[in-house]
Image 1 (cartoon, protein in one colour):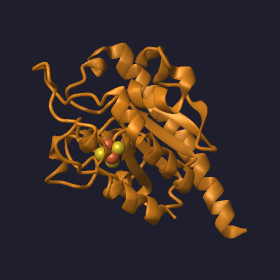
Image 2: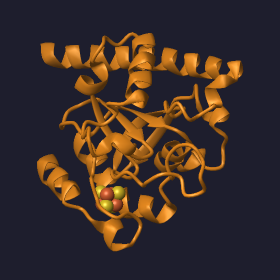
Image 3: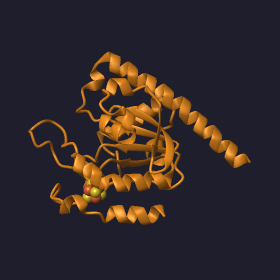
Image 4: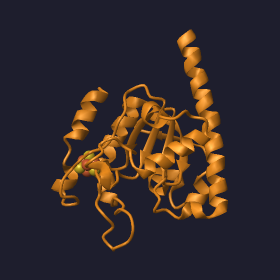
Length: 212
Ligand code: SF4
């Protein structure tokens, strides 16, 4: 089932047809049964050359956070289903700013069916939401809350009929200055402690399941 969904996503050109992007290059990676999922905002500009999600600077920062939470090197690309609100790079910022253009609400809505299918078929226990846009898409109660009110919380959420624990994190992109504030860095440290604890419980449940 997930294979069919992934083939459908890989062939999707909805945002091209709607005039948002010149060409589609959907980026995601993972397999059914992974208990951990990362939902980012959208792939970055290196997606065309490096089709593995989070293979650039953001992935390096994210792997560093996972290491702080007790995960071994390589865990990001081995243990996590990696996806995002929109699977295609939206292009550079159109107002001349640093970084990428955030996907519009319409693009996120166009891609929502893909994300819902991924969640319904992978059935993760914990989803790391990178940035406020991802957090509020996955948990409507997070809407209009600042990132500072979200990072460090573990939020029961449900999407596509599947219940999971949502852990909001800042976006690991170097463009974000959010972590320059020591109070926000402390919020991230709390979030990584929560992740460490929750992931440990998930691993224990999996071990128990294998033994029984
Ligand atoms: S961002 Fe999503 S909906 Fe838009 S073209 Fe890419 S895969 Fe399709």
